[in-house]
Image (cartoon, protein in one colour):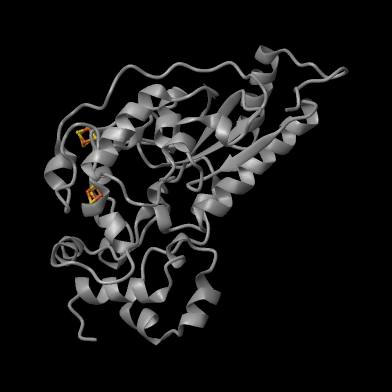
Length: 319
Ligand code: SF4
Ligand code: SF4
């Protein structure tokens, strides 16, 4: 295992944290926090309970040890840098709501591309200041719960809808993190929770928000829109409840914490927006053409067939 900060470049952790935060701000990331690299014992308990209840999507890391122990991902880990990437477009969206059928999270170029690029910029900056800096960056593809990390890093508080909510940008934030071998000073989690108005519980099309800060992903419309293979009658019923053919924004749209929020600080989330598909756009394009046109969009990873299926179910089109 390499030790950080060999002779010549030994920045003090408090100075280095300030440099990190300042650098993140210079690239328009204004929500950055730190989690100490240590086993997430509190999370492990909650996660095991979720697994017992079947409240998992199947996209999460399956090995519980890797999910809760940072050292199994980076042996030399000392801390995890967590960054939030707000994506609310505000008045950049003037499209009539009946022409929107993609979730807000999918309007821009694929957030995985945008976030990964920013995380790599941060890591490169740190490599220039810290000798033997080791790291791994993740956005959605990491072993840990990114929402848990965002909460632990003090960047937001839990909503009953299981989202992390920030004061400035509400819950419309993507989460990325960098596990690394530098001992940045950890931040403290926020003690408050959401207003607990239960709007999200009442409005959820999948009735999958029980009210205890968890959700059942198996009944979440967002998950169902990404599901391949045959859908159950219940899946179809849930899909039909709202018009989005990819994702679901209901529990965020009804949340009072998402009123009067600021629009994204990142220009990348305001460019090349695509709000929805017309039926013929999907029906007439070949699979190959679809992938060529939309390979840099987050809705494309399941292919055209899943989107077309969703469209046809929701709009009751004959196949
Ligand atoms: S995304 Fe939609 S279906 Fe999923 S929990 Fe929120 S409101 Fe319910
Ligand atoms: S809608 Fe109400 S209960 Fe749901 S997350 Fe927002 S404040 Fe909490």
